[in-house]
Image (cartoon, rainbow, N blue to C red; front, side, top):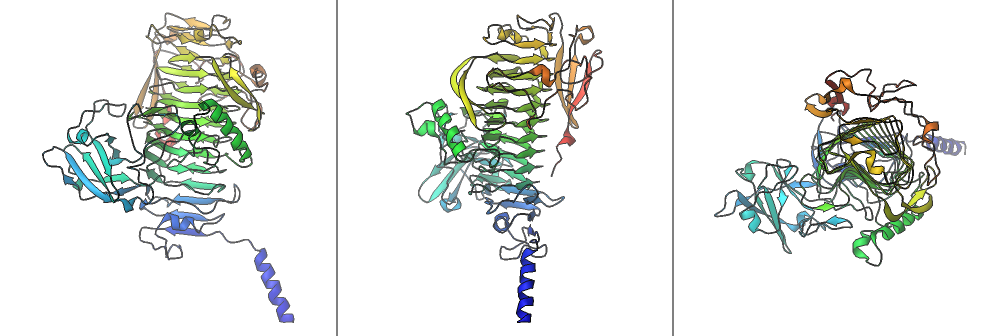
Length: 638
């Protein structure tokens, strides 16, 4: 009896002890029947993802892993995560593609080759028969597919007929302004997929040719897998579908309606649609505007909003992600996308470039960062260029802050705020493209920014939701009556397009008041007609230029800057900002604390009186001023 009591006590003590966190190793020399130890690693990341429990680490060693990682479990709180990481100092590639060998030259052509692969390579998803499709996707009269072909990690252009590969035309785009003839076409039958590609003067059998095969690279099919960290990977070449805000949004790395992920220090490129998605799941609707013509898109999305709330869209269950220090490029829809799932999140330190650069199709979702429902989302210190739109915050942008971003060389607006009711804060940004701002919104505060391009604004008749402060709970719906913005201590630089209005004169006829003070207008940029505290320098020839160097990005300010008449300014404080008119809420930090714009673009403290106009606190302007505004070491490479 005494022995039995001792055994029972030992069992109880053992059960009370915390389970020791494990580290699973993955190696190209491993085996999936191994135990995952450093001495006996697993072969695939997905095998480790079926074993990892809260607190565990999956360490992946150097090499190329062609797989879809579908985790079985999530973490158990911010301090008990599951960490997926590339091994220190080792380069790990996670790819949605496969290598294709055995290309045969097509007779009587120059540079055209063909290869055949069995459909078994694709499983139940063949991206060469899967058409690009979805709400607000505009094919422009053409048919494209989710698959793609890559020559030495550069994607070719899809064409619609085999003849267009045999005798290709020159395709010009943002990515290839001088033109290219590197194109591909696919024929699919019941057993095989035949690929035709024009490789120019290159022999594809002597180069690396890959085709996208999988719809994603890191995505849990189960919802609710919270607190996952994904760090240090090179992710590429997935056959991702179009990610409409009314659809399941699956990028190459995607959170699937989860909470508390950290996605950091990765290189993410060559997605057919989206790089990272923080967005919606399928149960609340999937491409409703295409599949159900009873209602228009606005009514469909309002229904989706209420469905997502019933499906757990709140701070306790969804969002609160961190996306930082990633390089994201060459994705043909968005770099970072999220319908409602990016609420309460922080996105910073990312270098996002060449998004929607091939321009084969269009749509209403193309941006470096495109979010719906950016409630209390903090987007700061990112570098975004070579895209369509830089940042696009669409519907229910409330309590957010867009701060200290470097945005330039985009073909559309650097910042697009669509049907948002505020309050939201836009401060210390360098908006340097020829179009700075497009907004169909109310209740914004624009403080200490540089606007180098024009501003486009419009009233909106769509009824869209606004929310209880710092929550997802819907308070009401309203149309947009443009105005009720605050513009304090900004710099506006006019351009040379005589048909374009620069500055705040575009707000001369708004119905709600525009609050302006301390703004500097240069060249053709004009103040609002009711302005009292702004200063116009109509004869100035001030110009800002971007200089990209190996160590970073420099801003050059030139012209007769020493003769500028700079306006008197005062500090922008919580008390001065007041409340957004429609929602009735004050301008606050995303955590609800009072907001004061007391630091500049670099984080330097501004003086409590007479701060300098614009993002950078300069004591003096004299001739040409060169400022390093992005350090390439700010984004650590894995």
